[in-house]
Length: 111
Length: 112
Image 1 (cartoon, rainbow over the protein chains, first blue to last red):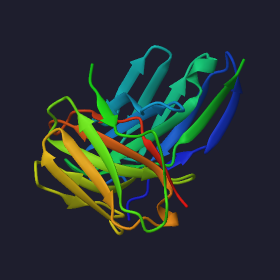
Image 2 (tube, chains in turn green, orange):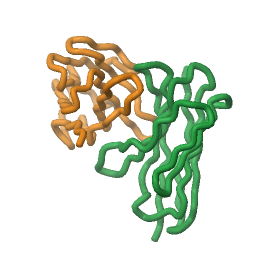
Image 3 (cartoon, each protein chain N blue to C red):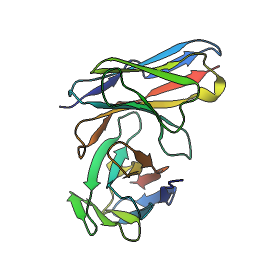
């Protein structure tokens, strides 16, 4: 069974705080790791696709790291803003077609 | 701008009804997917298709079927809707092997 775990399940932070969450996945048969942001009433939006151990990706105030040997990825948000409030999903891809999603971390940023 | 559209945002159906959820993508993608999302669970794959008229079962295909007659359209069918199929349904499409997966806005289905 392929388990993809995300922690925490939910997070409440104040505007301006920096935060991070974790995605854990199997350390074998790695193909790619995807991060998505899913705002209420919108489509999940792709943030990053990571394929190599040690990858670091950045998009504005959001960045992500990848460790395929130990099976985890961190997503960081620097200086959180209310518009960052969303559910952040990670997905572990173990071959061309198969992708397993975590349950998501729901982030709420209070003004 | 890439686009995946789903026929309805909200749908209410009765137990036993046949339900069709439609998904259309305009990116000429080979691969299309249907997921459902329930509280506390990740997106779970119901079915996917990697070409016209081709389909593969995902993790939870029971109670569902699919149809892909044209490359841009992938339909999810609930032959006889049941209350445990009340959920958010998301369609997605993807092109070549390493490319990103794009999602539709979702259909929230309630079966009463």
